[in-house]
Length: 124
Image 1: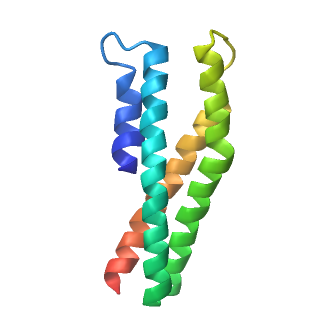
Image 2 (image 1 turned 90 degrees about the vertical axis):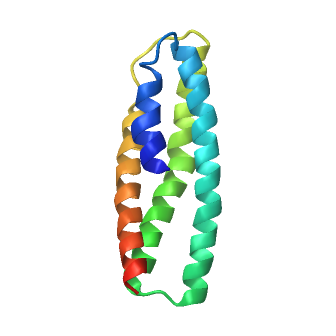
């Protein structure tokens, strides 16, 4: 889901015919809100399974990385992105937000963490 939405859907929607910046931002906000909600539910489920299943150190460490990244995205980066999109939707112009670059970098870390988590969990 992270790969499909963050690295495929998000950049492509702005290249679609007749998709304006306000429409793209509106769609993006809805899609990422849904994605983050699903991520939170799955994170709680995986955390519960890891706690009950007695996972190894590698699984716990990779899960911790993924959880920390998700919390940072939701608590620190998404609010900045929302403020920026609110400003753009209100007609304000200004420099591009560094929060977007931070979100993408965190998504990359999260994807690597999820891959490591999956490989280690399957190796058990």
